[in-house]
Amino acid sequence: MGLALLGSALAVFCFLVTPLVALLWRALPGLLDNGFSPLAAGALRLSLLTATATTAITVLIGTPTAYLLARYRFRGRSLLSTLIDLPMVLPPAVAGLALLMAFGRRGLLGGPLAAISVRLPFTTVAVITAQTFVAAPFYIRQARTGFAAVDPRLENMAASLGLSNWRIVFRVTLPLARRSLLSGAIMAWARALAEFGATIIFAGTFQGRTQTMPLAIYIGLQEDLKAALTLAGILLVVSFSVLTIVRLLADRGEGDA
Image (cartoon, rainbow, N blue to C red; front, side, top):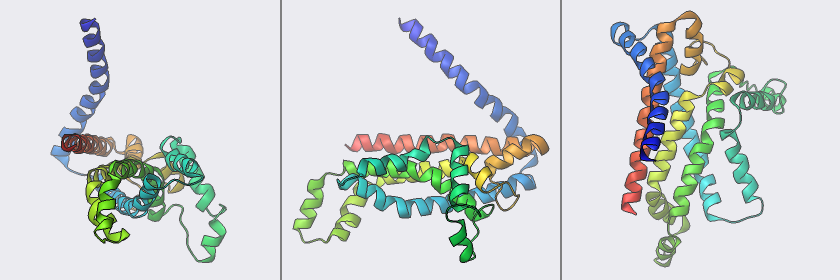
C-alpha cells in the first residue's frame, strides 16, 4: 500500500515538474547571455504596470465588498457571491467576449461611453479592465475568509470602549485580517500578471500598449522564441514565488491561531 502511494505520488511529481524544468533549462541561458530583447522588456514593463494598477483597484473596490459578504446577511447575498466568483471559472475567451459586449463600441455601454469620449477596447485601460475582471474574485474570496475569521467579540469590545464603526474597522478588523488581505492581493497580482484570454480579445496585442507578457509569449512563438522563453521563465519564477509567499502567510496564520 505504502509503495503504491509513493509510486503514484512520484509519477505525478515527475509529470508536473519535468515540463517546468525543461522550460527553465531553455529560458535561463538565454536570459543570462542575452538579457532582455525589446519585445521582452516592453512586455515585462507593461505587465508590471498593469498588474500593479489592477491590484490597487481590486483592493480598493474589493475590500468593502468582501467585508459586506462576510459580515452581513441579506436577500440575494448568495447570488451576489456566486456572480463575483463566476469569472474564476469562466473560460478566458468567454470573459473577453463578455467585456467586449459590455464596453465595446457596439456593446451595452459603448454608446454612453462614446458620448463622453471614452474608448476602452484595444487600449492599456482595456488591459487593466480585463485583468481586474478575472483577478478581483481571487482577492475578494480570500479577503472574505479573513474578515469572517475575525472574532466579532473583539469588535464588540472595541465598540463598548467608544470606538466608531470606522475606527473599529481600521484599528481592529483590518489588522486582524491582514494576512488574508495580503495573500489575496498577491494572488490577484499574480493572476493579473498571467492573464491572457480575456486580454487578447478585449485589448488586442499591440506592442507597447496592450502586449503583456503572456501575449508576448504567444507572439514570440512565431517571431522571437528567445523572448518568449525568457518571459515564460520569468512568469514561472514569479508564480512559484507567489505560491510560496501565500503558503508561508497561511502557515503563519495557522501557527498564530
